[in-house]
Amino acid sequence: MSSHTIDSIPFPQVKICGLTRPDEAIRCMQAGADAIGLVFFEKSPRNVSINQAWEVVDALSQKVAAVGVFVNEDFDFIMLRVRRCGLSMVQLHGRESPEMVSRLKAEGVHVIKGLFVDGEPGLEEAQNYAADGFLVECSKGPLPGGNAITWDWSAAGNFGCRYPLVLAGGLSPDNVAQAIAAALPAAVDLSSSVETSPGRKDTALVARLITAVQHTSELFEEKVIQPIFSIPQVTDHA
Image (cartoon, rainbow, N blue to C red; front, side, top):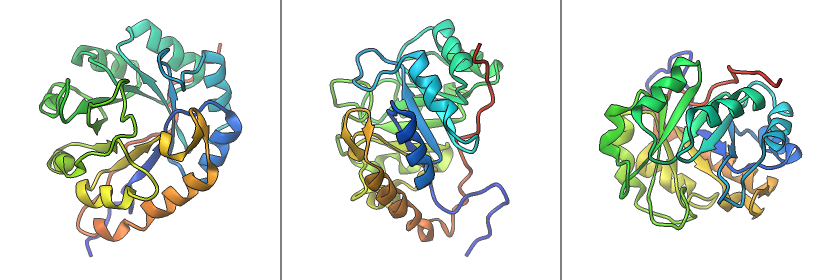
């Protein structure tokens, strides 16, 4: 068994996306989630206001990353929410430019860029982005995001050997171990499969998911995993 560095982790991190309520975010945190996602996209049924997002972030421990999810928004729109809500990271899930990523990072914001195995931007564009990690999924549904559609997760396996990989799309407590075995990601991202309705998380499903992820540690005996999700860095609730 290979030895891990002090900063490495034994199994992939877990991001639960689409939180809308502080109490449910707390329960996700208590179940072992490493990050929660807050969606700032009007067409999403999980869209939150600045005040809603701030209430969720304010309820969390600083050991849990608060990730704002944006789709083709401008710099000022994103930075207002980063500062007002106390976000630690942003996830850019549209066709944002490499320049946008660099500009956000210059402000001390950690960035995850969404890429698609069968859409734009594609995996080959990772080299153009100075992102802290890349969320990879398919592009088959009506909205940006996985749309609960399963896909060939192994298609992201080689990518994960070269870049920090967040695997998403069609994951559930029942198949997450299979997906992790196929792609060996640094993190997984789920939303609808751990919900009772859009934006309402089922704590029992979240706990079952995290247990399943933790049981994949033996798959990483020969691979060091570096954490992608970080604690909050940019805070200004004024």
